[in-house]
Image (tube, rainbow, N blue to C red; front, top):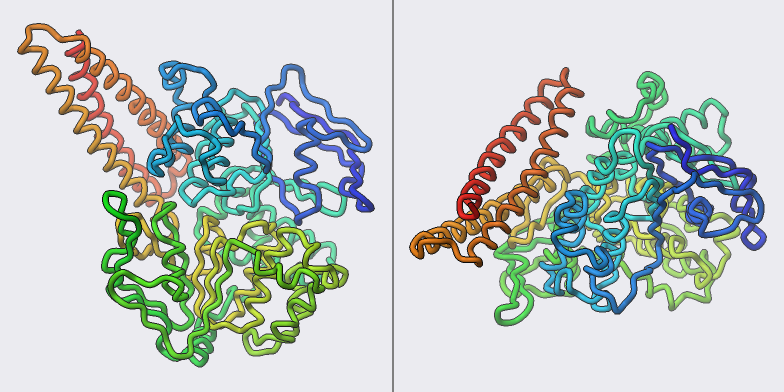
Length: 613
């Protein structure tokens, strides 16, 4: 394959720290590479070097001639006075970009929510958007262009579960096999497995390559540790635990990476399940009693007049001792409001919230300002101010040991809180909460600013925590790893259990969107029929009716393109999984549904074309 980027002997020194030490590597056409590593080890620096946006202290980077490269950094480069349309599509007329299926997919997949948020859609000014909306616009602007190499630094930040799934699917199908290249830094482990076929780990000044996605990376890394008699016993145990989770999980998690199953099985043969659910539930009942938090016939709404929205409509939802629940939902559906009802920070408009007499709630919010009051303390002092030790499982664990488990070295344990990085502050925030020994723990987007190693350490810590846990997160890997069941807020005022997990949530959302499209299509057909009847009565179609019919034909043609694309994907998947009867049967059901949708679209096109002719 054609080599796109070559790096030779890259060396970067930051202050007194050696970030990269004579690193040589390359990217070729068709590569799909994920970059992982601890915060501060040089992941973003490596990306900027390869994009020629930063100079190395020594070494060089070479691009192939005519390379079309685009990079999404963590900063926000959008001009505040521009509109969304200008930032993403430039001055291209609508018929020009709407005729390109890839650009239409980007606009609908990333920017469709701007209309729902009532902020003006494509005509909204950048300065009026939230941080998450601006991030989506920046990502859309990049993906709408034609590029040979796309470099993404934390692209899943500010995306919900549905947005992450869309982005993974878009990147998988953006290029034909063997064409284009992708390099991405992300802490989203599901995304790594779904998109990447190779992983680079940046650590201690070097970059180690691994074949396969995140699951393969964990397996190979654990096996290397075993073979080389790795001295960091705690680190190896975490890798073994993570691998055991991956092996016990859904088949989709381990089907893509190409590693030796026998070796992986031998490596985790004696590894117990991540947590003893029965024992934890028993301890949680001892600490909490039988009653935790019950939402009984709760109704909650916001806004006034025509803008009033009902988030929860006569909802009854119960949390028991030891429950571990993940919450997913569309933006604005009420996930954070649910947590506020549990804590008591918000009262329902109707119904009641009943809390057990022994309940002690702690919430990890998306803000870390509460650490400002201990900014001048050393990290260990900030933890010990809450408690010197905490009960985890059946033993007391001192504060210093917990700091070490969450990645704080002896030196960092004596660093001022005000000098900690964003990821370190996030870890410290969680640890201080746990030291207070709450029996109900609420985590609101806990993965912000955490690298994959730290996430594994946090999950390991939560495995031994005996209490009721509620997690709101867009990180589906974390949700499935630390919770035992998931519920969804779909924006219709209900709370629905998801026996099929996040995958079921995505399916329900797709069905809801398909229903909305069908309703819109019915309305469009009615409008076309009315215009046709009016034209017939007048003896000839007027110009407005013809324009409406042509617009309808264009819309239908775009939908037919999407259907054809999805049908091709399904046929390919059926060929790949020909020996899996259940998988083929499921794909065939979807294929039949697409055939029915295509037939309806073709009828709509013919109705509109009759008027144009």
